[in-house]
Length: 169
Image 1 (cartoon, rainbow, N blue to C red):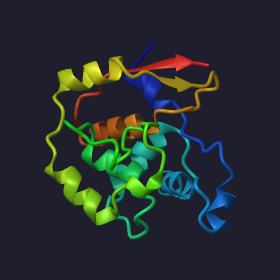
Image 2 (image 1 turned 180 degrees about the horizontal axis):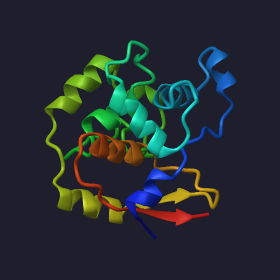
Image 3 (image 1 turned 180 degrees about the vertical axis):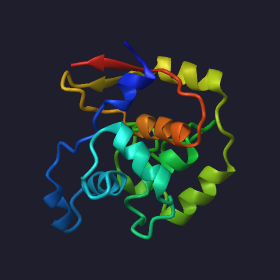
């Protein structure tokens, strides 16, 4: 199902995982939870519209970014990119490489992402049409956070919103 911009702004990004995981040394979900913590201003923001408003006002060079939690903000910062190697950078939520040992460090990611070419609007449209993600019937993302963050970045930069595609569960 196609998601209009208005519906996109009303989707929620809520962690389905207890944030207390951040206190557990080397827990495998720490990169996800800590990245979500940064994205949502310490879990205070839920709606995509709130996240957009917050990041319009705040710099992406957040001092709290580190080698584990940069992914969602870098999706906002760099958006949809051509020829992205999902083995080394899981920026679009690929589950093919779930072992975090392959992910780039913060400075490596910044250098790598800044070297890539942004996708054209037409390529983004095709990319999104072929990669729908799941949203719960309550309007909460079940997956697709990386793609949503890339679209959040487009909106923040006053670029055209391109419809996303979702399956409601």
